[in-house]
Every structure is written in C-alpha cells, then in structure tokens.
Length: 415
Image 1 (cartoon, helix red, strand yellow):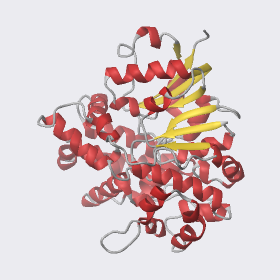
Image 2 (cartoon, rainbow, N blue to C red):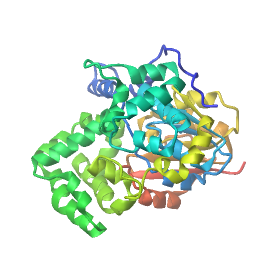
Image 3 (cartoon, rainbow, N blue to C red):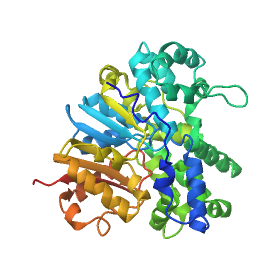
Image 4 (tube, rainbow, N blue to C red):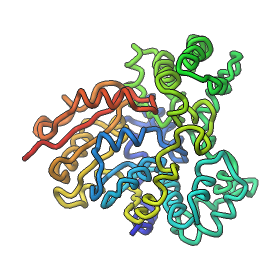
C-alpha cells in the first residue's frame, strides 16, 4: 500500500539545514548556505530534470526490483512504476516535494481516467482542476498534504489553484526559467521563438544567433557570478563551486554550454525538457514526446502499481539504516551527492553497500563531469563497486535534460 502515514509528525530537526549547512553562520559561506536553505524550504521543482528513460535503461529496471530514490518532483518515480517494480521508497527533505508526490500518486489512483490525469499535470492549467481535486483527490489524501495544498495565500487562493493555471511556472525552478525569459527580452530575444524551428539545423541557428550572445553580456556574466543566482535551480553553494569549475570559473559559459545541449542536441519533437525550458509547457498528446508518466500507453500500469510507493520525509541514509542487508536492487541518488561532505558520502555509501542486493545498481548525476567518488569515499567501500565509465558517458550523451555535467552508473561486484 502507498504509505501516507509515515513521517507525518512534526520533525524536531530541520533536515534541509542538516544537509546544507557546512559553515558557521557568521561566515560568508555560511550566510550563502542559509539563504539557499530558505529558498529550498518551499517548492523548488514542479517537475524533475533527470531523464527517466535514461534512468530505466541504465538501471536495467525490471519487474520485481526494489528501488530507493530521491523523490524531487516525482515524475521519475511515476515513470519507474511503468516497469512494475516490487517497491519504491522515495525520500525528500522538502515538505513541498513530499506533498507534490503524494498528490500525484493520489491523482493516479483516484482520478477517473488518463484524460483527467493529463488535464491536471500535462496541460498549462485548467479551470476544472480545483473541482477535480476536491471531488476525487482530497478525500484520499493524507492530512498534512491536504493542509499544504489547501493553505490559502493573502488573496484567499488555495495552493491547489496553481493547477488551474500553469503549475510549471511555479516553484523556484519556474521562477528561474521565467527570469531567464525576461532577461532575454531585455536584449530583444524571445526565447520561445526557438519552437518555430523545424529541424535541428534551425534549432542550432537560433541558439548561435539569438541565445548564445546573451551569455556574453556584462549584466548576465555579473549576475551569474553570484552563487545566489542559481539557488532557484536548487543548486546549493557547494554544488555551484563544482559547476563553475566546468567553465574555468565562468558560470555564464557553463550555462551557455548546458543550454546549447538542450537547444541543439535533440529534435524538439523528442525532448519535452526543451518544451518546458523554451515554451514553458508540455506538448499536447501526439504533438511531441511527453514525460513517460503522462504518456497514455503507461497509464494503466502506473495506476495499478501506485500502491507500491512509499514517500518518506527524511534523508536517504536514515531510510537505508532501517532496511535489512541486501534488500535494495536499485538506488537513484539524483545529484544529491554534490551537496555532501566526505563524511556524509562515506556514511551514505556504507549503507548503500550494506543494503545492496547482488548485482545492485546505483545511478546518479553530477554538476561537474567527474564521478566525484574516488578519493572521497573509502577504497574498502568503493572497491566493492564497478564504475561503468564508458556506459556512463554514453548515457550522459543521450540524457535529454542536458543540464548536468555527468551521468554515472555503478554496479555491485560479485561477493
């Protein structure tokens, strides 16, 4: 059954603070970390920015697998359900993400049809979604998630009303993308015009002639040199340092390179991440590729398997400490390790290694290109894993989200 009761009591600790704070509050780095924690305390990712098709291929995900993953916006764990895993334990430190994941699971279980699910999560807003929530979802949602979605702002609007407009313009990520569009307009560029391209060649021409020059502007270079400029992307100070190293200290250059891959390396009809970045919406069914969880072909299997997910408001190490040895087949770490100290990495990988079943697989992404584990995780632990470098590079090349420096696959060695 879907676990809607775990971790519902008020927490005495602040898990986001525990994950982010590495320096004293009075230091410059400490102030930056605390500003990031403030941003990250609300909704950050209305959708996830890792390609689930690459995830499932790298994991060789099959029926019966037991998965531990970080939840984030929830799109990926719903996609994983299309392969009928035995169980998915999803963790997140962000209460808004917890509420969003539980909302999505309840929607799949209780909305009447795929059309209703797509109207709720696939369209750029629909005025009927609030009524659908009240009738079908709210009665089947846990108390804390209902409290989150039904909280009213100063104008008396409930949070759930965001789905009556374009939900993907909400959250820190939606705000960041919106700022990017407005900044481009200052230089006479309408970012959405790239959607008029009819071929990869036209996409590249638009990028090189319209988008790339923006990153050479003094204002953009100055703004992106501030760590706080990327907080809305969910990039904490420690991850900013790893990311900027990819561009020899020039963050504008890094962002330009990542945007070039998003804009040019995949046809627009195949890449819904590009649709969200440039058109600020998903395509209509039949117009272009959709997120796996919104594709009608997967609807019945996701709906049937929704009870196999448990959502936990805790960190991944705490979850693994409660699991028996050898009980997890697949681990999905997203980019969380970029946040971690050496001590946290060693604690995490000790638990991953203890709980890993034979032939277990771990996938993760990094802001920079290298795997980041050698030299930081104990050789006695890391030596039990086979890092698939060539496969990792190929998966990264085909990852449509395009925003990370590296994709990484590790496979448990035979005992």
